Length: 136
Image (cartoon, rainbow, N blue to C red; front, side, top):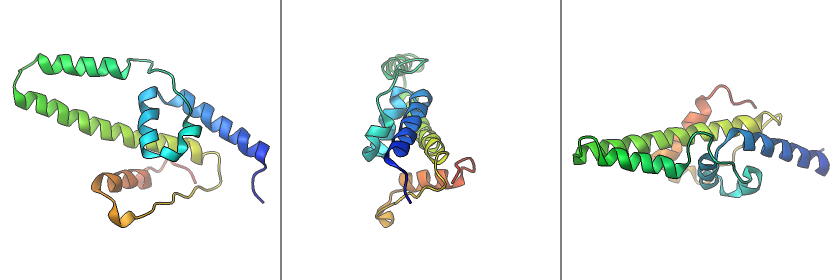
């Protein structure tokens, strides 16, 4: 038998509450890009406790204007920002899966057209598979 509708909705509410407490606005927006069908469970988000993404962008822009001023300096910062962004996305996806998987006996990820995957997608899948803390 499946979950009753009231039990299923209470699990969904519990998961949504945990997501609300775990993720800031930027993380939720990134997760929506990866899982566009999960907007309802991701809900709306609080602003980051530390600084908003607009503050982070302003800080990054100020840093780029200062410093060495060389093109290479700006390029390195942008490259680092991209790597940090990817790492943050992988971490957010794994945290989301930990929350969801902790409420079910098993979770199946259906991945369509894997043969067309790019390196970034394969890196994300590798990150998920190698994370021993994701239950079920």
